[in-house]
Length: 120
Image 1 (cartoon, rainbow, N blue to C red):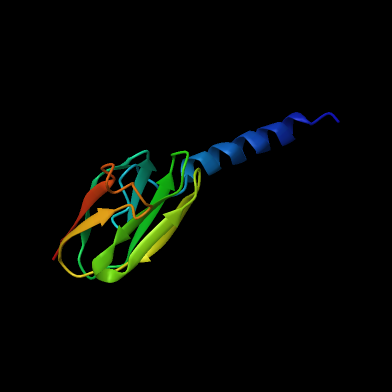
Image 2 (cartoon, rainbow, N blue to C red):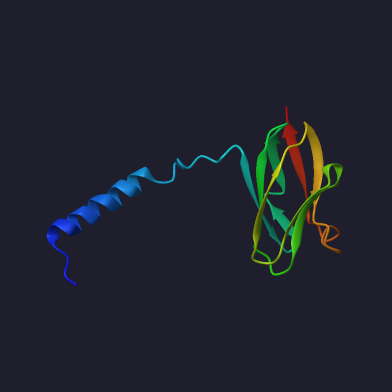
C-alpha cells in the first residue's frame, strides 16, 4: 500500500500535535503520588514525606526477586507486591512520623525499614 504525500503530511502533523500535548506531565512530581522501589533488602526512598489528611497514592514497585510489602502498623496499611509487580494503594493518615517496614519474615531484620513523615 502506497500512501499519498498529503496523507503522510497529515500523519506527521498529528504525531507532532500529540507529542506537544503530552500527558500533562511537566516533569514535576505529582504531590498526591509516591513511588517506592523495593529490593533485597531496602526501600528507595527509605524516607517518604507526604501531606497530612490528604489522599496520597503510594506505589510499591517491587524490582526485587522476592515478594515485599510496605507496612505501617499504626493504620493497618500493607501494600504487598510480588517480584516484578507494582501495586498502588491510596492512603490518608494524620500528621506524625511512622516506621515503615517489610513484614515478610526476615526482611525487617535485614534492614528493610524506613520512615513516613506526614506533615500538617
